[in-house]
Length: 360
Ligand SMILES: Nc1nc2c(c(=O)[nH]1)N[C@H]1C(S)=C(S)[C@@H](COP(=O)(O)O)O[C@H]1N2
Ligand SMILES: [Mo]
Image 1: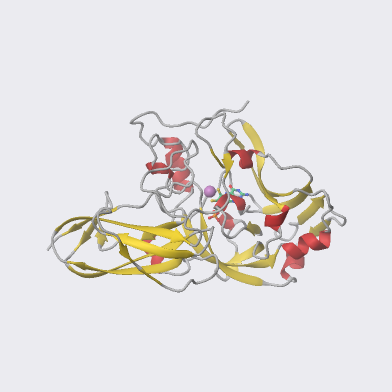
Image 2 (image 1 turned 135 degrees about the horizontal axis):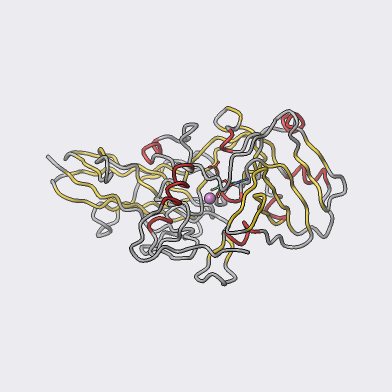
């Protein structure tokens, strides 16, 4: 029996179930966007169930289903293959969920479910080619070693990619991040990495890749869909919509995290990313959207990594300011001024607003 996802009642505060999720799945402190690469341990985390216990010595990656030569690969086998490192920005599809009204009850992210690491592994494509996908293969199903129950459905975490997507040259099987072995919480010993897609596609603790002839319709495929009503068909989430976030300027108030700043020159900086195309423009406002200014964009760090932007703000007078940034990408996708509500609270890229008080 499956229980529907819940939307909070009017005025209902974040509850202990959401607090429990938030305490396990931490976000990235936004001030660390000053770094190109998020320091190890500061990248956000999203784990639906428990971090599974895996013995690297006996662990195998099974590649099976509709393939000519099923494979069973050890970590050593994988590490002996061609090695690639790329810097990739990952974001949870639920980033921004906590601000939606009414609030979908789930991991209550504000804006911090993002991070950029330097991932090391081997391309997936040659492994699939060696296994030999049969003609009728439609999807590849990636299954993790973690197990749980979600809204009444007991399951292993599993997600699929269509063959064309799985065959992209930049899709990797990774065993390292930021120069070390994957820590347990990021998928030790191996995870899938699908650059440009929301995080749910990058299956952690990967243990099986199965080639199937029909469209895989597993729980996590249906869950990560945009729908207004519980029984809508829904549009599957794939790539990351553009977003810009500002490194909060000045210093914070402990509880409200409202920013406090003194008059004088202030270099606003932040990061912008999109899974659809390169970020081409970032605009910044300090007066709540009254006037938008073109920010300066640094060269991209890597094809799928966020771009730094800066805007020199001359803070002249005391008072209240509202700082925001918005990104536009090469496909002309940009960020909405209003919250795009959906039942799962996904892809809310409504512009961030930082309230700043300038004091003498
Ligand atoms: N096996 C497995 N893979 C998973 C998940 C999970 O719960 N189990 N969570 C997914 C989601 S929703 C996100 S956003 C990313 C988060 O990756 P991270 O925790 O390494 O940041 O992992 C994805 N891969
Ligand atoms: Mo996620």
